[in-house]
Image 1 (cartoon, rainbow, N blue to C red):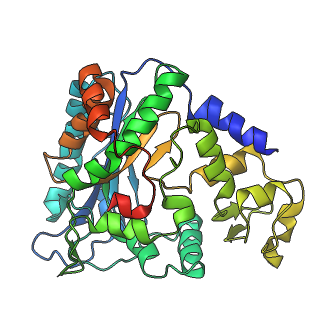
Image 2 (cartoon, rainbow, N blue to C red):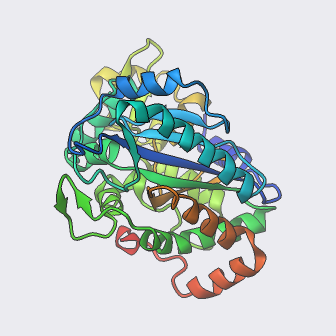
Length: 348
């Protein structure tokens, strides 16, 4: 594999263009006991109840974050109305499955009552936790993994290369606006933090090589920017050919392409042989968490989770501002003087 292959993957897969019009959303929820909001709810209990209720009727996928947060990911829809109908039905389906147990879905950007607690020992999450501790993030790493939740909006890349570049610039200019407009996490572990979006403050503290905004230079093509970002980011974890999961092998992806950097750990020295594969690149990309992540669509990751029924509002707003020509033009004009600004502080 060569750096040019990374760019080729960015162009052909991550920034694949086509006519806009498809939208999807992911909603994350804390599962709580309303009578004891500070008490942990076992993830196994939640899984059993949700799986026992059968598949969500609207076709959403149910997954779980390392702290037990429940995520509903919709299918892509050609328009907001069918998306809203399907995802609302699926949220109601899960809510009804939990109600007999006295449990509820709570929409907050950060768990306002409970400290972070891991409820999954999947090797991926164990490696992530170890990586953050090793890299100097022993507090905000677990907070991000176990105590945060979001509404993610998924929108098309663009009709062609020029449109993709325009939408890429615009969504980065709008990102801090969306953070502020839908901030919903002033509390953490029973205390006010001083932030409207504590979730965004947590992300701003965490490992900028994989959480900072990708856009730095408005003149740089989106695919080039994403390839650069991926190459410069440290490898968080590797699934070795012998089946081991290796956390923080001690190199960037670019160094891995060159045979491993000077910080390569001794127990990861076997990674020098052959270099990374396309599967390794794709897995590396899944461990990068910028506020806007290209995945063949634009994944907007900066919005705090919101309670019912308000989760639908940022989905509609973001979709309108990118897909409606008049709204998009107005948004470009309104954010023109801010476009291209860099730095984590700009997102707080």
